[in-house]
Length: 263
Image (cartoon, rainbow, N blue to C red; front, side, top):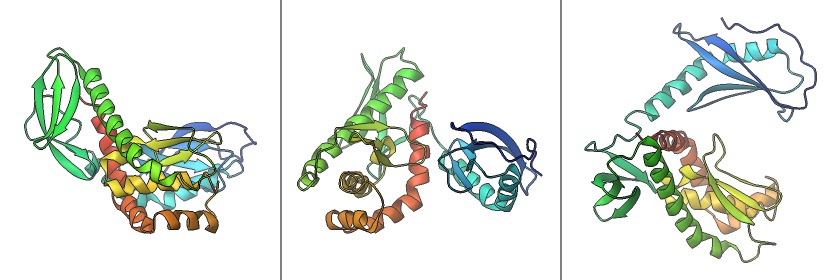
């Protein structure tokens, strides 16, 4: 049974409030759930990512309702946590170890290790080559992994974006690559586009779809039927890529976070 703080209806906070509660699953395993009181939330929501479980409550939702929601979804929660545990097996990278691979654009590249003056990753017909100084630590490795993926992602964006610019009211102000916990992309009011760095690990068509999705928000800043018509006109197979993310998205995000912990 979950242990909760006093079961009160909260006042109306203007900022996001966070605390943790413990929940006992059906197999007697006890887990910690991050509870978030978010003024922007419209409904109670339970989500899971590689960092654990998160329960989101609207401002006026009672703690009793949150407790009930958690208990009703214990089985689902256990299944999602188990899937995340499987996704992160065999990662992060281990320096110099044989038989390792680096995910890129939906493929697994054979990884080769080399001693060098500075840290970098390069690819050729034989796979990926990780060049690393003898005294480089885990931070240098992780930085090289991130730099590699950012350069590959920017190369893809540079190829795709120009073809979608005609007909837009404006171009994106800039494009940022970041590690995102749940979203794949976003567009700020000032036109700054953010894209999840994990996109470059998956198949290229899925990455391109997310770029098109965010570009279309320059025309329609919503998810109305008019917005989806804009997406359809530019990327008719968008439903296939949405299904791909439903199947593989969890694994892609988990892989990236583990790779950035290279050691």
